[in-house]
Amino acid sequence: MFITRRIFREEELKNFLLNIGNTPAGAEILSKKGNVYTFVIEEIDTRAANILKQDAIASGGDCALPREASSFKCTTCTAVLIVSLRSLEKLLERLKKQPFGLKFLGKEIEKLVAAERKSQFEFDVNGKKLVLDKPVIMGILNVTPDSFSDGGKWNSVDKALFRVEEMIEEGAEIIDVGGESTRPGSEPVPIDEEKRRVVPIIDAIRRRFPEIFISVDTYKSEVAKEALDAGADIVNDISGFHFDEKMAGLVAERGVPAVLMHIKGTPKNMQKNPYYKDVVKEICEYFEKTVDSAVAKGVKREQIILDPGIGFGKRVEDNLEILKRINEFKRFGLPLLLGTSRKSFIGFITGEKDPENRVAGSLASIVRGVLNGVKIVRVHDVKETRQFIDILFAVEEA
Image (cartoon, rainbow, N blue to C red; front, side):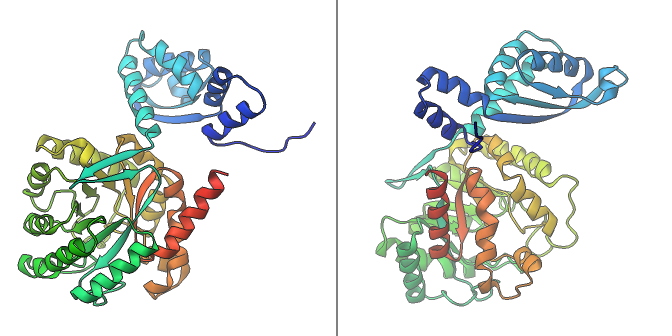
């Protein structure tokens, strides 16, 4: 008798059970037992926490409570619920009948699991369909003189079209055109200058490559409006609609997808001593308010893509924590975008000062993301990223 392997993924376990002769019904049930969830529930009523622990154990799971909660020496506490998907289904039925907010908690957990398990998103825009089932590549086209990595390289129509054609051939499905550097310490660019930089190039890309998706990287509604008129499909707003109050209304009116990013401060001051007690929790709270605000202004929830904003008002340790816990942002049931390409935290860790030599570090930084549900990776090095993702998923699906 030999133990030959460990199986981590639910679908892989299900297929293995079928291959060794389990019935489809049995494989469905058993594969859920192999998928374990851990939920941290803060400030739960101590009475509810003790009932939750009893029901979790009765359902085949468990729940960790501080000793003070078990002896009712505190009114609220933090509970850690640990259950398989199969046990969770049983637990949720029990919670429907329980007091002290447990019925509501059950509904929240149910929504959270449904959002996390959502694996495909689709956008219909300008007669084209963008399907996000596996990670797609957003190729960066900075038409600026001062971007941190490639400033001045692609700021003419001819140079831009050459680079776009190259990125499409290398595997990019979205081209992200930006006319203002948002590197730490950068100054804002006047609206007319930003329009002068991006609009003619977006128009030229749309004419030459009618099927490619184009996003405009701007937080200014005037720039976004003219970019959309020129053929852009997506608005990529680093401010999450917070820098220009008209941006949400424009996106709602046009019905286009929009990337809402988290940023602390502005590009000019965001790296002046940023601090978080719990960076992921705080970004989640930001997204909760930002998405609700956008929807209240007419933006359809299914139009929204979320970006945790690596490097935008973050310390090195914050960026690493975000990458380590990237799956927690799936709670919103919205597609995630990740942009780590060539960024300074990679240089800080590796010692590589030249951004163009951070390709390996950039690829390493996206592993956790693409294996945990990130649907768009925004990169400079398209060819290398395409090969990396293709091999990574070929191994995962073998």
